[in-house]
Length: 265
Image (cartoon, rainbow, N blue to C red; front, side, top):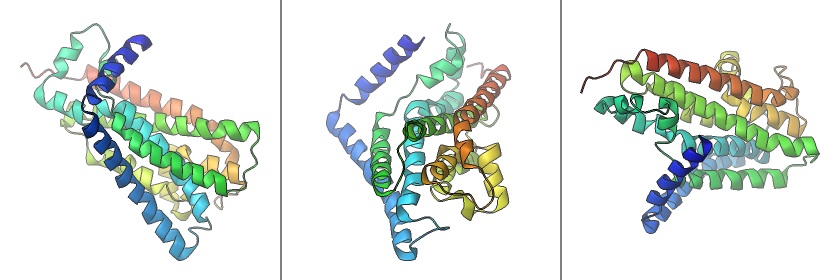
């Protein structure tokens, strides 16, 4: 199954690379557009020096981790966004159900947006800047924590995209509320979670746990204490939280497929 996935994705990448100038322009456009996001953050921190007691390099650490995680999720799971909406609107999802491969796998392999490397590159650059400016003690555990957190964030964002796609079985379109937790969530947790009120912290840690893409890990790496009592050590639970959230998303997807009614066309 894994080898088939890579073959299908390889074909997607080759098709995107056929027009190299167009691809490079899209890549550059994505890079510049997302770079402006951090420029806004940097200007804010330059003016006010700190947000919630967090300096620019510390906020850059938060921003970099969540930006890289979100870009990887967009790259891999974009098939559950607009392409899946089109399947539902055009009635072509029926074809997937007649094939021997599972519908989840087919939708996952239907799209791979390599141009999202622009966002990833920008996020990695911001993350590199943060790590070069911060006095982090690089123990083996700290070295492991950064990629583990980014990977967990990627899985959480992918789970959100799957949940959004599943709603299409009833609504035909992905509800806009999902964008509040994907795009909106990515922007919200680019700042320290302690600046928000209790219900926002609860939602983004316990219900839609995108905060595990950066905040607990940043606390642990920086040796900071959360003013609301969140233990920094909970950062090591991020893979478990991500796996559980994705399992819920996958179960919801299977439920949606079981309730799907063919268009008959």
